[in-house]
Image 1 (cartoon, rainbow, N blue to C red):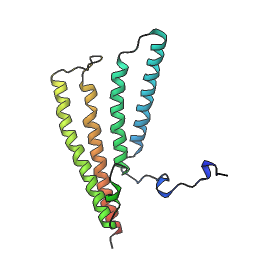
Image 2 (cartoon, rainbow, N blue to C red):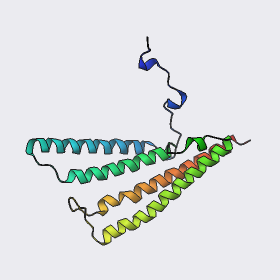
Image 3 (cartoon, rainbow, N blue to C red):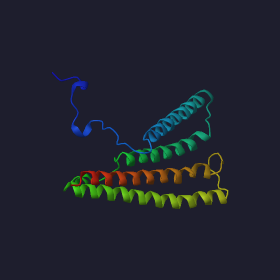
Amino acid sequence: MSLPPESVPLPDDASPASDEPTRVPLAIEDWATVIVMALLALITFANVLVRYFTNSSFAWTEEFSVFLMIVLALVGGSAAVARDRHIRIEYFAEAGSMARRRTLARFGALMVAALFLLLTVTSVRMVWDDFRFGETSPGIGVPQWWYSIWLPVVALGIALRALGLFVRRGRAAADTAP
């Protein structure tokens, strides 16, 4: 006889962890994710209904869906960085002394911040080029910078979240130092 699923204990690493306190609430990313997912579901459902009943579709839905999926990936990345759930090789990140692990965690957060600051700077130039040259989107012909402006904004947010993680890991190291 097996136990019902709700009575089976979760392993320590699978239990839902509470979020660390941050200056900027993590609910921003959570709500942005909810809103983007709801928009994706609504426009996809509307397009399916229109296609079913009229044998034609809204031209803008595919282009807008791709944009929303990119925003969703970036917002999810920001939440992962803020919660220290980004990808890492556990063999290296969790091996060694506590001081080594803290140092690697801080180094990882600093490298993520550097990467996304570089992405912010380069994508600002891309947005400026889109604006300056009057680029339009391929599907519906709106200005391309309407879509691309969000890349530097969210990339800067991710960089700031990574810097916040770097600071929090430094405080944690200072709090546990003898």
